[in-house]
Length: 384
Ligand code: NAD
Image 1 (spheres, helix red, strand yellow):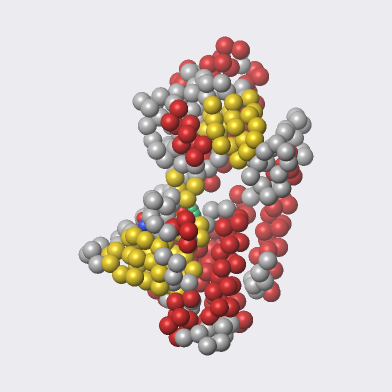
Image 2 (cartoon, rainbow, N blue to C red; image 1 turned 30 degrees about the vertical axis):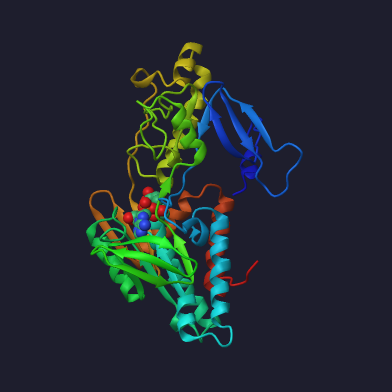
C-alpha cells in the first residue's frame, strides 16, 4: 500500500522522505539519508535531526558470505525481487523452448532450485508448483513435464518451527507434488549455471539449475549493524539486531526505539510480532503528551523500565499460531494449545487470517479481487 495513502488521513502533518538511511548518529541525534532512486535531484544526501527515532527498517537476506549468491541468486524479500523472479522464470521457459536446445540443457534451464527450507522457501516452492501446475501447463504443454523443483535445506527437515506432525505432512505433500526436498544438504557455492552442495556425509555434488531462489533467512541491515557498533557492546551484544527493553527502547541509546526484524528479541521475526509492537509503541507515543517532562525524558532514554508498569504495562506478546501455505490449496497451522491442522480447510483459514490482517478495506478488496481474477483467468504470464 502506498505510504502516501495512509498519511493522507493523519490529523497531524507528517513529512515522508523516500530515501535510504545510511547512518544513525546516536550522539548528535541525527540520521543520514540518501536518495537511491533512479531520478535524482541536485541534493541526494542529507542529515535529519530527531528527538525520538523509531527504527523499523527490517532485515536483509543473509548470504553467509557464500560465493556467487549476490551474483547469481534471486532473493525473495522485496516486491522487486518477486518481479525479478517472474522475469527470470518466464525467460527460462522461453529459452527452454528455443529451437535446437539439447535435452540436457532443457533439463538444466527448467530446474528451479530453492535454497532454504524455512517458511519463505517452502511457500515459494509451493506457489511455484501451483503456477506450473495450474497455468504453465496450459501455455507451455510441451515442456511442463520437464520442469523440476528442488528445495535444498541444511537441516534434517524443512520448517523446523512447526510440529513434527506438520513437517511430515508438508514433506508428504511436496513428494505428492513432485517437489524434491534435499534435506541435510548445505549449499557451498553458486556458479552461473550450477550449484555446489555438500551432503551431511561430506559428499559434494554439482547440481545444474536455471533459476535459483535464495531464502536462507535474515541478517541486520548495514545502518542497523552500524548503530549496534556505536553503542555499548555490553548491552548491544547481538549481531542479528538491536537489543531493546520491554518498552522497545534501544538499550544503551537515548531516544531511539526499535521494533520488528531489526531487533534481537525472544520473539520470532514475523509480521505478527512487528505489527503488535508497532501498535504498542504508537499507543505509548500517543500517551507521551500526558507524561511529565521528566518522565518523557526518562522514557525516551529507556530509563523507566519497570517503573512504568502498572499504568503503562510493558509489551506482552501472546502467539496466536503459525501458518504456512504448502501448495495445492493446502496450508498448515500450529495453533496454541497443541492444535496442529493441515489441509484444504486450513488453507481457507489461512486466507481468512491473511485478509483480516490487512489494514484498510481498500487493501482487502484489492486482494480478494486478485484472488478471484487468478481463479477465473489464471495467473498473468506477461513480462514487463
Ligand atoms: P528461516 O531462517 O526461517 O529459514 C532459513 C533456512 O535456510 C533454515 O532452515 C536454514 O537451515 C537454511 N539454510 C541456511 N543456509 C543454508 C545453506 N547454505 N544451504 C541450505 N540451507 C540453508 O528464513 P525464512 O524462511 O526467510 O523466514 C524468516 C522469518 O520470517 C522466520 O521467522 C519465519 O517464521 C518468518 N516467515 C514466516 C512466514 C509464515 O508465517 N508463513 C512466511 C515467511 C517468513
